[in-house]
Length: 175
Image 1 (cartoon, helix red, strand yellow):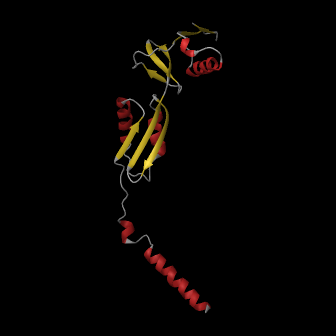
Image 2 (cartoon, helix red, strand yellow):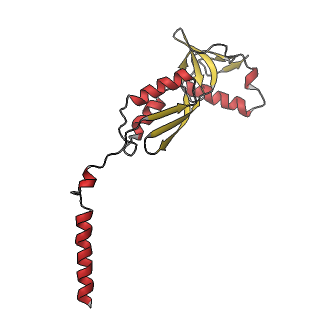
Image 3 (tube, one colour):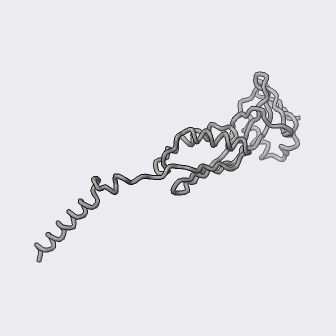
């Protein structure tokens, strides 16, 4: 009786190896679908298109073997992006939902006007008719964000501020 169980196990083992081996013809012909559809949503149409082209230039072959770090680096390099979520829709689609950064203030650096975003990045001045405070002086972005946090926690309304003055002696003035 014990020998019959051993023979059955041995027969099942050889069947498993022969059917499921790497040399199986069906396994060699197995192909995964390439990513054919990438959707970027959350920014303006022009900015979505720019971000989409950056991601398409990565030559994404397969949804199962995506290199997340490369995609994250491309999205993080865009200064308009504050947060994002990447969804894999199997078998061949990728959806990226982006939250646009909030513009907090204008800043003059080396003769160019920049915007300070809530994500802590400087954005070039491509926006018009934005009514936000102008920052005078040369503060670091983190210094400005800390100051804005203090204002938000106080009884002052940030929306009523027209200008912010940062002095070299670390004194601030609000107008």
